[in-house]
Length: 83
Image (cartoon, rainbow, N blue to C red; front, top):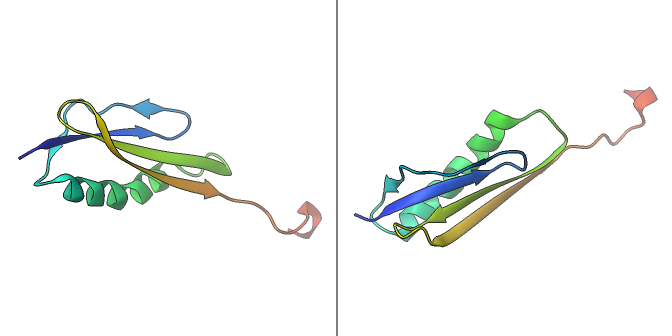
């Protein structure tokens, strides 16, 4: 089975996967990347009001084959004195 590597960038820290995970095909690796991205974002928040989370999937040769981005933005809709 092919091995895929998941590099993660949260805007502050980049983590390169040097172990990888075996999947039957690229579609399965893509699905897993999309599945874990919200969990990664949830673990890192709430240290800011805006952040982009990016996961890049690389194949066994180290070539990027898929990328997913999750953008988080929080903003107040009322003036400070009304909160």
